[in-house]
Image (cartoon, rainbow, N blue to C red):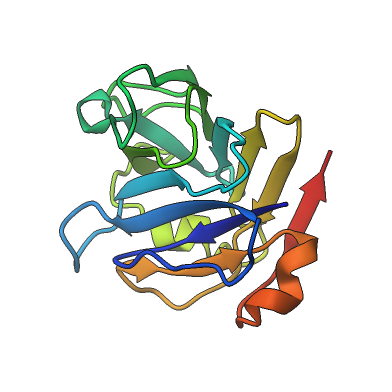
Length: 196
């Protein structure tokens, strides 16, 4: 089983025994308040089944926005044995007000107990850097919200569409696999899709 927990500030424990768990922290990369055009994220593999995380991708549902820059200087693995790698397979590393509507990483040796930290910058397609990532990821109005996809070494994947949420500097969302929905009993469990 897989579940993804979006966490900011706190690490949440799942009440589901033997469930694979990935946690993702999303926080304001500008230190809180003001613009939220840069977003810090940490992905952690908390699986108790030994399943490695092989990939993660994010897509801005509103194509009037783009991921301008993925910061190489912010990328860091913790908790591993030094053999972990992250390869940006889709995305832009230059701060040039241009880039794709999505980014993706491929991972090696991203085993349970390992975390990966990074940071993205989201801008308007017209070059305006004053985009608010909260309105692009979570609150796109008529346009679709952002999509996060996680792939695992057992061949499974988890696709999640971000819900509409109030603006804040930190977000906590829980996206359980279908088998653990009843066990977690938490609110805000929306727009979950699982693919094999």
